[in-house]
Image (cartoon, rainbow, N blue to C red; front, side, top):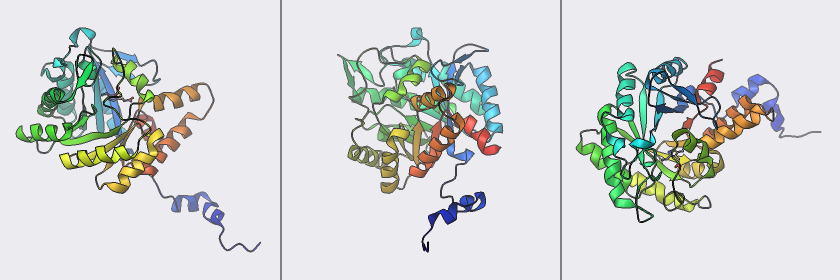
Length: 325
Ligand code: PBG
């Protein structure tokens, strides 16, 4: 047959496939979320996230060192807080002597070139398990901002490079920018969880932190999975309020949202490949139902192809090994 267009010509060998490849993953694309817990010499596996551990600070430092040797440079820190330290106003979140704030300082002291991203939301420290203050069964927006401001400031004072408001309160990016600037932290960046959906895929993360809501759900602040135009409103506001990065979360079920934000905003777009997305691939791989390594790399590639140039993923260390080999 005399076909003028034969797309298979560009797929006929590994060399040509490599040459025409449009998207390439790099270790520098990744941010690894890490879980810290109290104590010494503690390394406890999250049962719903095989291969992911909660570390005490001493062991977390070793883990970070291994990751740095693989080329990973940014870590997003999340705390597992004892129930006895939780309260209605998440006061532990800005305790300068608390686990989280101390850990930021210790990591930056040992690895000055590593970037520390922090989480700004009340849920790990809240006795209600919600991201904001609860009054009469409702999550109240404006009083929550004050807590978030104290949290972000304490994190910046400890040496955080990027703060990540994951709470979805209205106006928090502008409020945090103001608090950080007034504190002299002009260089601390804000990666806003701009389009964060009320998703079932956060389940294993809530196991890791033991932070599930004590009542109700998060639908009055996190977005409805059915909506994409609303993501443009959230992203626009975060842009105007001073966000340095716009994040979409989860990633794999929201590739259209990643593309939408990438097409409409000139900020770097991040995507959070969340705990449930990790757990699904791990579970299927453990059952021998799919090739875990290939599924991991294909998923990460898809997230980047959709338009995310920063990927937060529990696969970061494993993927770095693959990319380095
Ligand atoms: C909460 C927060 C969540 C995640 C990051 N920050 C869960 C939630 O909103 O309940 C989820 C991350 C993951 O599932 O990997 N502020």
